[in-house]
Image 1 (cartoon, rainbow, N blue to C red):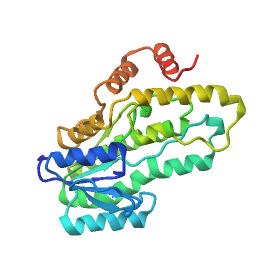
Image 2 (tube, one colour):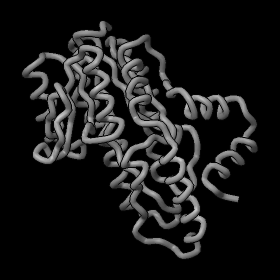
Image 3 (cartoon, rainbow, N blue to C red):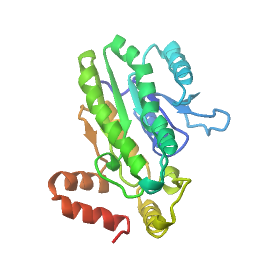
Length: 269
């Protein structure tokens, strides 16, 4: 793929990683479209063309994709960045909350991919970049549903890559660690809290806040996304720093030291 004429679609550009990713593609000379849920409330991003699209709604997605295709005739890169999170013990996280979270993090991504793939197959080229997390290969106490959604995303992405590479389309993952974004800093709590978890949940919540406050800005992740989209293909991309270290630890370290490290990170004894 060249690096100066690609048509790029990035979901969830209102803030955080998605917003910085759209800016990073602009710097590479790409024609960039970014999705927001409410166009009237969205803050403009330089030359990024904002489109109103809700990845929980198939009709909304189809309208957005049709709009881009009508203008450009193609989509070369899809970056699935839109996502939500949830903080709470697994026992106190409801099935309804899990369904809402998966509706964005997994099914929303799937809906968007299924709307874009016919065009990529027709043009016989394309790159799909799914924003996962280190929680796609590691556990996260009190973030069970979010971690489950990222594990699901990883499995789906690997499978999809095998299915579409014969069409000239490749799929890859970007797995950041703590990043200084509003989503990480303001994770909503499960609604039906259980008092037995209050103390430890509070400690974990504070540890997350501390880690986010010290975390790098999302521009580093954005640069990794651009390289994943425009560079030579490989399945997994971890931004430099903590994410890359965690990937190595998970691969090479024994289970017990890794578990101890996780519990220490989240302030657990």
